[in-house]
Amino acid sequence: DIVFLADGGGLKQAAPTPIVGADQVAHLLSRLAPAASLQPAHVNGHPALIIRADGHVDTVITVRIDDGLITGLYAVRNPEKLSHMEREITVTR
Image (cartoon, rainbow, N blue to C red):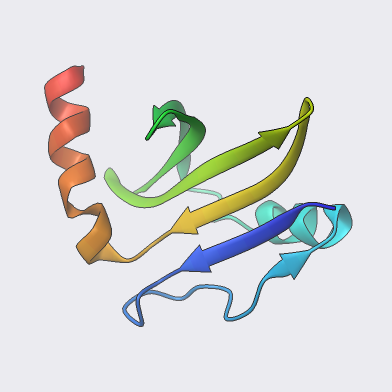
């Protein structure tokens, strides 16, 4: 089953416990802010989504794939961990 983990670092809202199951994870993802934009990427060698809100990186979700199936999503929302992402994305464009 798929597992969704989130890290807000106590600075941003994030799921406090793992979300398990395709239906539960899909419900959570469907609630993303409608104004957010999604950008496919690779982060640390893994497929990922960069979520921007108000033009700034808000969340990075890396995707774990096992045997062709998505088995995990790890969302980083902690601004301290994302501070370098904005610079790296700008440089690589």
